[in-house]
Length: 104
Image (cartoon, rainbow, N blue to C red; front, side, top):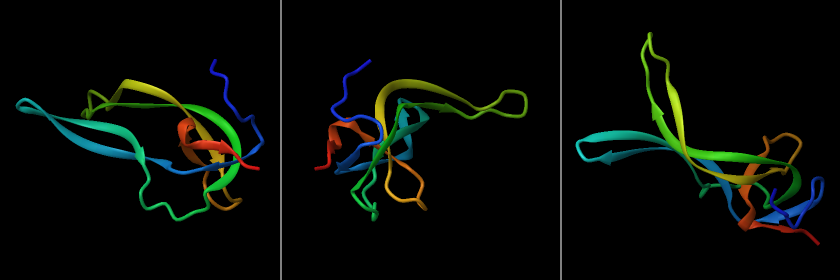
């Protein structure tokens, strides 16, 4: 387990939250669908909150199935992210630990 600078329940500041994005990448003749975590450019909420958890997030390929073969996700890269509560009425957001610091 990684030693993080802040502990659960502590107030933190962050610079860039994460959002889930879908990308279509060409691989030779074939295209592939990816689900990746990217920086949320249009985030308008507060840049301070409380650390409420740590999650493992994954980027990877999505294989869309049919009736007989279900859709599946093949993770290619994983990383740890902080789960931050910024407000009682907003859903918690994910932030990379590189973009996180303890609030004073």
